[in-house]
Image (cartoon, rainbow, N blue to C red; front, side):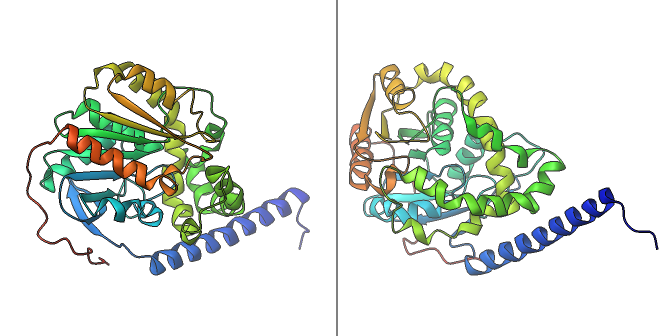
Length: 332
């Protein structure tokens, strides 16, 4: 039997390593989904299945999470429960995140997501809502305000990216590529991302330590192959989305509350939140001291007060309340 050449031996070793990585990722994905099944309800919107969590009664507040997260982020931070004392709170897994679907035959811009979410709210009998978005979710919230102004009573924007700027993380969008991206997202990308997880979480919470509640976050929910592809796609869409949206901000007429941490290492407060505040005369800017990107783990009281203030400014219109305000049952 002929001995393998050095090149062929390296190819076999690489194939073996990729196979081992694939098996580990598949095992971790199955395990985390078994340990953390859907905790809310599902709604079908034009054939698209969205997962959402709902609690409380009163004026509606819709929560839109950032890139890499799910609606569970608002539960861990305590903001979901705090708002539910006075409001009907609906936290949605944006398309592709958590247990919401995201067809791959469409580019899921903020505007595209806003259209689907607006229809979901109408199906849930929400005629008007305060829309709160964190990070990437803030762009979707803005798109809802721009494209569906009759539905949006006011906006609460947390740590958002509003204007195009140079970003180094665009280089991490390889898992969004066809074919190569699928290979990476099922093998090496989740393992590399898991190794980077401690440093990333320290960065998003810096200058504060990582919040104790966030330490309970099921890491592999964010590292599943299908979600990694979505995260990479949204990273690649950030700059063009902000470039397109910011030309329309002047048409917003509803109240806007803008929150930013003065120590945010992910998004520059001066280039983003402060600039948006200067452009929107009807906005209020809240700079949270000694805080990074995850302001909803620090400023729950101030955020709840801003939501209440918008409710008082715009009484809104009545809409049907959910039949029950109990915790939604888990669906399998």
